[in-house]
Amino acid sequence: MSIDIDTARRVAKLARIRVAEERLPALAEEFNAVLGFIEQLGEVDVEGVEPMTSVTPQRLYRRSDGVTDGNQQDKILKNAPDAREGFFAVPKVVE
Amino acid sequence: MLDHLEFTSPEPKTIAGATDDWELVIGMEIHAQVASKAKLFSGASTQFGNEPNANVAFVDAAMPGMLPVINEYCVEQAVRTGLGLKAQINLFSAFDRKNYFYPDLPQGYQISQLYHPIVGEGEVIVDMAPGVARLVRIERIHLEQDAGKSIHDMDPNMSFVDLNRTGVALMEIVSRPDIRGPEEAAAYVLKMRQILRYLGTCDGNMQNGNMRADVNVSVCRKGQYEKFAATGDFSHLGTRCEIKNMNSTRFIQLAIDYEARRQIAILEDGGEIDQETRLYDADKNETRSMRSKEEAHDYRYFPDPDLLPLEIEQAWVDDIKASLPELPDDKKARFVRDFGLSEYDAGVLTADTANAAFFEGVAAGTDGKLAANWVINELFGRLKKDDAEIENSPVSPAQLGGIVKLIKAGDISGKIAKDLFEIVYTEGGDPAEIVEARGMKQVTDTGAIEAAVDAVIADNPAQVEKAKANPKLAGWFVGQVMKSTGGKANPAAVNALVMQKLGL
Image 1 (cartoon, chains in turn brown, green):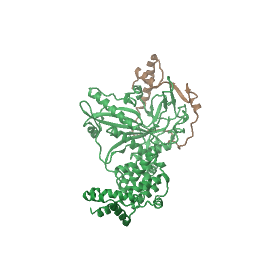
Image 2: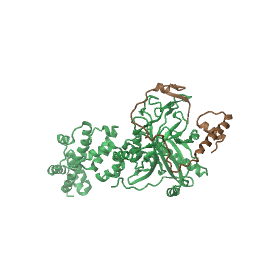
Image 3: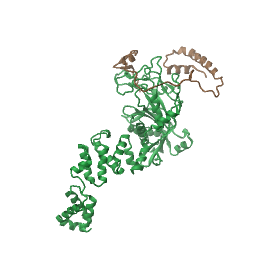
Image 4: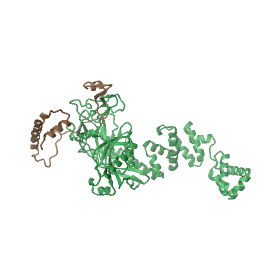
């Protein structure tokens, strides 16, 4: 798998990270180095091996259905660049 | 025992284009909000209508370092829904991240189940008319998070975001493309709503957006669908468009009809359909492309590293199964079988559990058919007039059952029964006691009726002559006798005596 400049630009856009045009070739190259490293893992024979999802054998922890959180509008909005009347206020997004 | 009534499939809807007849092919994704107190991965409330951003935990706001912890009750409701749709329950399922960027989704991804959904294949019988229904196959149900709500009309330059709904548990119920017309699509949504409400897993409130549907619509020429059905090869079908976020069965029908005609016009002009997401505009009755979503379709799914796979035990599934209520199809079949009701009446009475339970209370120990008539025609009609719900009915099942028993025993006539119903409805009281106390009992004593008949005949010699010439006029005497006895005479006995006395 190889990442070209167009792909690098697209990935940056999807992740909403601004990357200057002149930095894209270097970024694509870095991606390729990382992917090349990961591709080495593909050489391992994993035929018949169950995927490991946890280091220690454990069951997904469950919560019961009780309201234990919330009612902290001020804290939730504290880091918002802009907030009005209890809402986050963001640049207009319209379909 | 058969758990549903026999049925045949309806004809698919056909739309005539300029040159060809076209058939519709529809698949649906229903998003049903789980009726839980807390969210899927946080302890914040799901209560509708609270102050903006009051139902928000740090997890929902995607604060750094916060981790999701699954709500077991939500898992149980998904399993319960799956069992209610006679579906495969997957003891192993897992959560994935669906990445997209939107202000009402602060994580930048929705936690969903793409690769390993909790529920697999099931089915729903969608009733269209007595004896006619469409079997719609369910492909899967997965658990996922809802997004927040953006409000665009409070400020000219800003959108306002409320995260109260962010992270609320949704069940996405995905159907196969088995729905063949706008009416079937609406009926499918209503049947799903009915089943969810029976199960108690979703309140089905479409107005609040607790149940909404994405509708996939394509059109094909006659014969193509059968080729698809035989092979499973989608290339026999047309390219589909997805109409997003519909929460009204009326608009679903209008949107499908518009969308099908739009596609037919393009195809007959030699054009091609672009597979895309569209929005329905109810004011203009049209669908239009959501171009802004095009790039968002690259969701870059991957397993969520914050959540271990969800492994459940068969014994737990069995326990949930044992606790399922009687479902609509079973109940309807039982009402037809045990009470001798028509499928139509059984369908009306099983529309929701409150109606069904009320009817069973009325029918207990008496004639089911008669009970059904009184519940549907008299009680529902009267409640509708008062804009009241069955839960607030001033007449209890026992009271209405009492009226039905009096009719069945021949103690009161049908006409008197209506008066009695009105008294019980407005004043309350025990029907049998009211009948006794107010002398409403039907006169079955032939002597008394005979006297009344004789009196009417003696008073109307001219009518007697006319009736002898034209026997159809005998009904006039029956009416007069009923009037003179205050409606309490047994009509059949009156009729027999009138005929006999007039020598007809």
